Image (tube, rainbow, N blue to C red; front, side, top):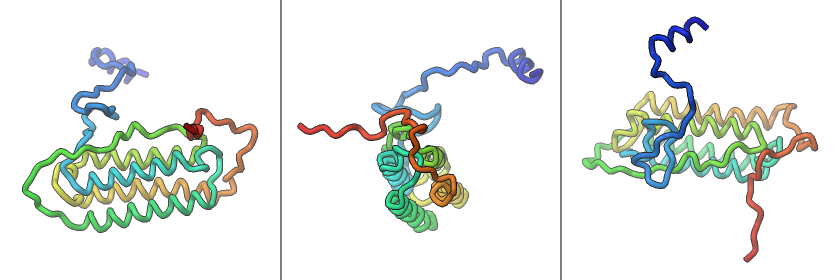
Length: 196
């Protein structure tokens, strides 16, 4: 408690209030935090960002997102997406090309992910995927044209594997419950079908 008081005394300008985040430089998209880019110069970062976005859409729109358990079909499909993401990262991260151009390539709207969903394991997996994506955006690798620097690659793989491990454990655990009446969705996950 004393540390907080000293902090407030010596740094009175520090604000603990939560306000709107800035969106300058990202027309039509939201910025997750100040200084997090919405574009990259790196072809690999652009591709990994797009693949993470696709996995997040699969996770939030599958049947398992609306219940507290993981179905075998959803798990098998998601596993294939994780495998493809890690395989691409492995081939893209082991070499760099020195292209002689500097282009800003737009990244996905990471805040467009529809969270939270009913399934807590999916929520946790999504957070790690978002962490992997945001870490790539601010990494040194994002400022080169191609490839991933060794530490950026390792950080990315670690976060993706942790995301997958959360789903693996939820699927195999004895605590993988069926959807019980006591478990109510907090919000609609999939919009109702509309026939025109």
